[in-house]
Picture 1 (cartoon, one colour):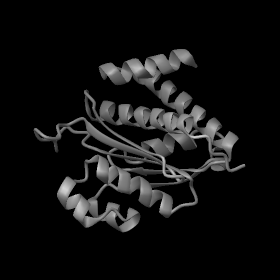
Picture 2 (cartoon, rainbow, N blue to C red; picture 1 turned 120 degrees about the horizontal axis):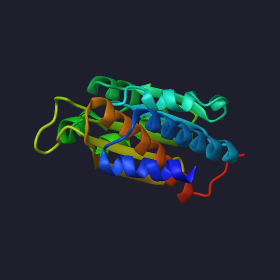
Picture 3 (tube, helix red, strand yellow; picture 1 turned 45 degrees about the vertical axis):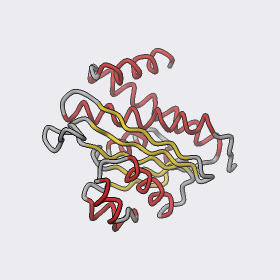
Length: 189
């Protein structure tokens, strides 16, 4: 397992990943997230934009994930972010869909519209178009939220083609969940 985590960290730092290795890394990360959530009696909800449900697919690929994964929201448009997750129009107009504040509101809205205690949100520009000087292709914003108020957010700048940016985003989201779970001692069981 440690070799997989080392590989994932190297992949995120270089943007270069072998597809078969990265698929295995995602599965291992998802399994680890699931095991930690299950042990603590916690549920996860995801809110995805640029990854289009890839994170949800990764976690539901793990047998028994219904014990720890409540649901996922795919909110690709600004309208869906507002209607499904309650991301404010003011936030979207001022900061855009790709911002940490938007990701934070996505994570909060996902929790409010689920039974989960842990949420993750991903919003970004996977390319090949859509970027600009301020937010180039590969810009991806994340938020991880624990019901008890623990919130982490981060912006990453990934390299590679559209699939590579999306894959790296899923790996980063899973790693962020592990970090959030490490920072909290809350158990629901």
